[in-house]
Image (cartoon, rainbow, N blue to C red):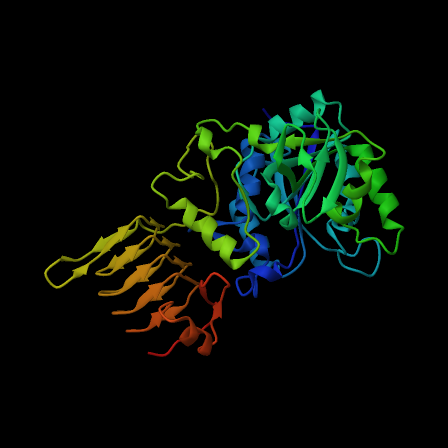
Length: 413
């Protein structure tokens, strides 16, 4: 169902410093994910699949690749008043860029005034999940809410990693704490707390009023999580929407509640690895909930050489291999290959993520690594085998031992 009275504003202007060096040259929502997608594609697909087709994307830091991606991948029908528009920071309200997530929307209130929607969805653009947002909007209406926020139950021991929402028995919000040692439990499940997903549905006038009031306070962080949401429940009907109750057509029960904040190298890596499980908890092969992105006019992936005697075999096991890839006499295991990756003979790639245009030379070994776009790995080179050696070569090594080879890195044999 096409929701004509809803405007969507996706926040995609963050620096993503914890995801460095993948965010050295691009915004976090533009970081590749799952072989051929970008992180922002997941939020956009959720809205489009849900029938929300008026979408503004707030951009700011290092947004060129994000802007290009949006223009190529997300062309809706202007004839039907459908759009995905990139909205760069413009200093519309003063001589400053966006000072926080709330300020990003405040500086673009003209978009809300122009559209005059009944409801405004303010969502982040940097999480991996599936969500039928029509169900959240229906909950918002049935609760007679002024504001609804999506939330996911997490063990109480994980409170310090999230903004924690306190609710009453009807799931009306009565408190909020940013990353407490132990948050207030869910009334019906005392071992769990409600973590904010940072996704909001506002009644239009409530959002405008709160943003205009927040803008005049110089000491404010101008942030939805840190300032707006910490006080708004005192004055309005604010409800938490239980994300685990969201139902996606064609999905299995085990997929309910899957939501990942891929804000660090280790969480990003693990979320990618989730995709290639034999029975994945996040299944991208549900064609009743399609995933859209840029279409590349590349040929299908090719696997060549079957010389088992000399161990020159082009094979990929437990992996995702994108279009345009050639696995030529090398072995790929539990890995994700973006378009146009070239794997040469006698090489081995294990537990790794290779981005667009990466080339792995003969006899090279890549293990538990993320290799960024266009990097050429020379003959016999070893990456991810010895962490200290990787650090000495200037590679970033995460706390979990994942090696990242940055875009533009020139490697010697």
